[in-house]
Length: 228
Figure 1 (cartoon, helix red, strand yellow):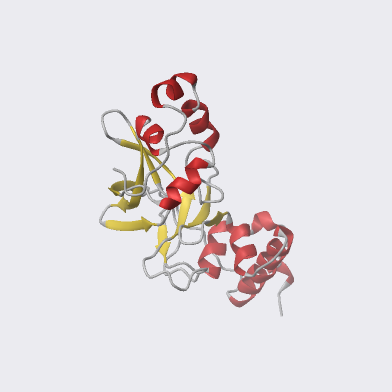
Figure 2: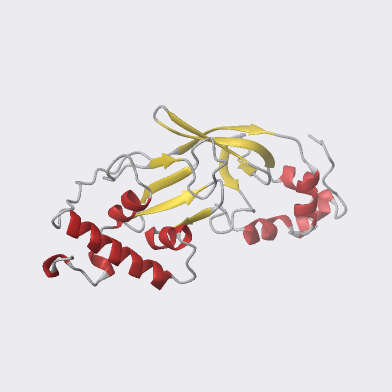
């Protein structure tokens, strides 16, 4: 039976770190580091692509699953994990489960001292040729491969996150790199990712549809299969 003195009723009293540690069964306590595990939503994920990371902007942990494009805060994690339709249902479950945890541990959950560690950064990438998928996607906006290449945008086969000695390869269709004139990569765009695409697509179109661009490159350029 739950003891009254350990019961909580306010979600703000639940440490967000506990939510990830409990529901993901993490092998370590969260104290500012990023953690990568195999996707809990994709049983075919052989290369760990599920990240639990500390967000400096929100001062809280969040998650990102590159294999399914799911991402969000700890409430969204529980909502997705238990197929709930409302965030409130997830909040109530977290409160109930945390109270149960407190009752079994004599109200003991000590917060760790936070030491924010280095983030994963894009370390490498592999270019590929244009494909039929690229053609179908970009031509919906009347944008072809020569226009994209004029603005130094190229298709990627994969890119690699690195932190220290840790590396994670991200693969998939519809990955595009934005390069500076000197050839250095500065943005990765993934239009199939529902939420965080890394760059706003309308900004791309605004630049590409300038009169100058179409005068230079023409309006009937299309993406050709296997073009370089």
